[in-house]
Amino acid sequence: MRIDIITVLPEMLEGFVNESILARAQKKGLAEIHLHNLRDYTSDKWRRVDDYPYGGFAGMVMQCEPIDRAISALKAERDYDDVIYVTPDGERFDQKIANGMSLQKNLIILCGHYKGIDQRIREHLITREISVGDYVLTGGELAAACIADAVVRLVPGVISDDQSALSDCFQDDLLAAPIYTRPAEYKGWRVPDILLSGNEAKIKQWEMDQAMERTKRLRPDLLKK
Ligand code: ADE
Image 1 (cartoon, rainbow, N blue to C red):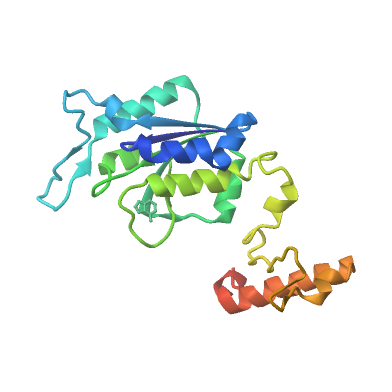
Image 2: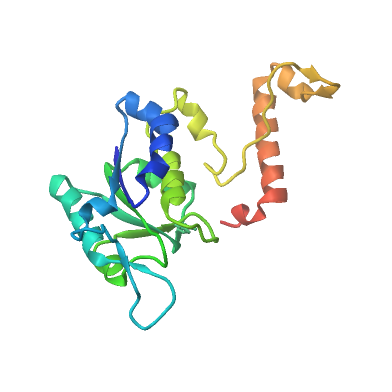
């Protein structure tokens, strides 16, 4: 899959794209992440991307033209499944949305700044609006990074043991069971005996019971879905 991220702060995402799970996915040829500096699509010598809002409101608004030019340039090269705008008033991102996106071929993610982007872009060019939670970030870059990370790790082959993506938290609307590694006892803190028993059926049942108990206690809202 290919993700094109349009941003005024490509440097902010460069390290992430080249170091994280995204780097591994790219090395294996399973994903491509491309960063595009929105300022490269401006037509004035100040490379300006924002202007004052009509109506005398506070803050600055990202202008139509550079965004339109950036998206059009990408669309001229290939078809996109979605042009995503990351914004706090979008659809709330979750594992189901990540699963769906991981099956798509080409995605654009547009990062907003300031007060946001001109509404006409949202109406005419954006096909999906996504929020990563009910809080306001300074810009969309961290949201784009969250989405790219959550989606790319689900692409088959990116995580070596694909079982491990399947047993993630939220994959069945349940939190994951606790996990342990060696030693079996540390400072007197013991790993649950059941995990040392070698009884696979009992261990599976324990894992399910733990997942259910943790979900009921910490995220009862997930059980109502
Ligand atoms: N940009 C600013 N805040 C955001 C959020 N919570 N989700 C997505 N994009 C954002």
